[in-house]
Amino acid sequence: MKVREYIDTDNSQWVRCRVLSFLDSAYFDNVLREKEHYKNPSVELVAEVDDKIIGLIDIEYETDKGTVCYNSNELGGVIWHIAVLPEFRKLGVATLLLNEAINRLKSKSIKKIEAWTRDDKWVNDWYKNRGFNWKESYLHVYAEGDECDIITQSKINKLFICSSFAHYIGKDKDTIKKAFKRVHECNLYELILID
Image (cartoon, rainbow, N blue to C red; front, top):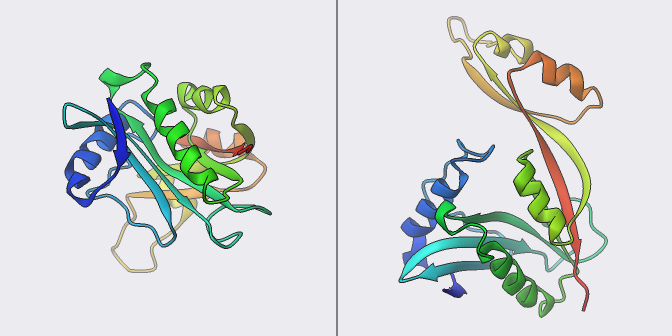
């Protein structure tokens, strides 16, 4: 296995790896048709076996404080994507990608990494086991059918909202979790990079 920088010709393999890696997670329907491009500098790495991308990590980082990270006094970066194909999990691929990204970020004077993830226990445990600390959370709320009426009404006659996605940042999370069938806790983790 080798870890290298992402190149544009990797796009279809990158998308395939991300889609297949997310199918058994709370992000199963967060499908991208092409790789994102970032406004700020980024570390974009892939893990490859026999010319096949089996893992990836994208971290966008700041050159000015507060342009990428949520709540920062230091220059930081955000993990936007990290994924490993299911058949290559538990082999240290994600950790290898993270460690290589950290080395590159340290050379750019980046002091911390943030990661947002939903409520998959195995994913949250992975972050905690690598030294990330939980900071806070909010809810991702999916509404279907009549649940949409709780959130909004169409202002256009004969136009009906059939599904919607919302963020809940309030304090009464239990009420929201009871009102909707699909709700995910979205957790913020932070890793302080030590020289």
